[in-house]
Length: 147
Image (cartoon, rainbow, N blue to C red):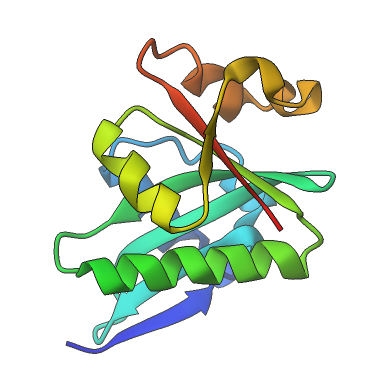
């Protein structure tokens, strides 16, 4: 099956919101940062994966990673590489993420992320609702990648 990678646009907002919410994630604020999202579509123009960055100065928080079971790991690698490239082009030098899945840590380490303690997160990042909310999970692990 053929997939197309693209940077989300305003016209994609409805489809992307539906895709994220069907996965049980919040799409709050998506309309303000739509051009900070990368999405993967199948041959029928259905969204099959997405990931975004919530920017704050030169930092960014990866959010809303949703991947269809139709995809292989190579597609996920491409998605991560694309969001990192987009973030760099938009002046973001440090990407943070929060995961509660131990199995994700190995993959994310291969993608260049390092696990950090919560006390080294820049204070300004803690002002993001998505970051502070994610850290309430007792299993939350924070990772960062700096360019």
